[in-house]
Length: 317
Image (cartoon, rainbow, N blue to C red; front, top):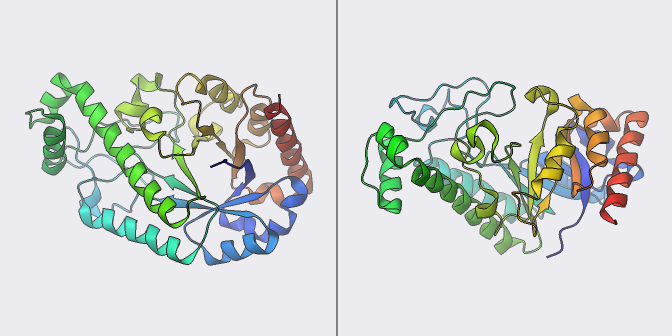
């Protein structure tokens, strides 16, 4: 399958400006869930409809059984923003799968981006609270059975089998990516399967990309067509060059047969987008989170259009 080059906004408020997309170089629209209104707008304006599909995120206040277990045997610390659930909660996993199937039976998106496909944590902050997690008895038993390790205490696992534990978690996330991708492709063979990713390199935060969030590009690459790191500059306390720098380093750890497409935050507009467009290793399209604020202003939309043309030009060289 040839992966199309897609540019456009993320967020339901952008629907109001769908008639302007084509004029300013946008050919796609990303939105949460299988939203009938969004699909209708995309069809009307001949825009690629791209779904952001929530996987492992829930409201812990209403679903406390989903809170992962920490090293101390207690529920992990969490604030208003957290992703990742206990992956031994079969009922929740079944709900997630049924939601995906319901959407696929009713709609035909051009792409589906799997979101929150990680273990527990939050990376959209300059000072992340990185906790080892998922040590409930069921998750430990799953680890021991699959890896051949005989250990029950989280401290013993981390002290003596840390690499096996990390590998197990990464394989578990990759297996879910594969499972969801197969479901998607069985209904829509040409649908793009994307994955929103922690935007850290594998060597940052003591390897937290895999150690904490269990995202391994090589393991996920067989079934994910497009990787989309969340380059949110201000939220993460980074430089506007972060997106460009990530792209230019990505060839070191992302398999070459897969596409890398950044999602940028409107809070960082235009600097982050302009820098991204300068990358010698171009982003395979761009998503603009909160993009309504760009397309409701012709001057800002023109900046977006120029960046699109620059990225396309770089891809030709």
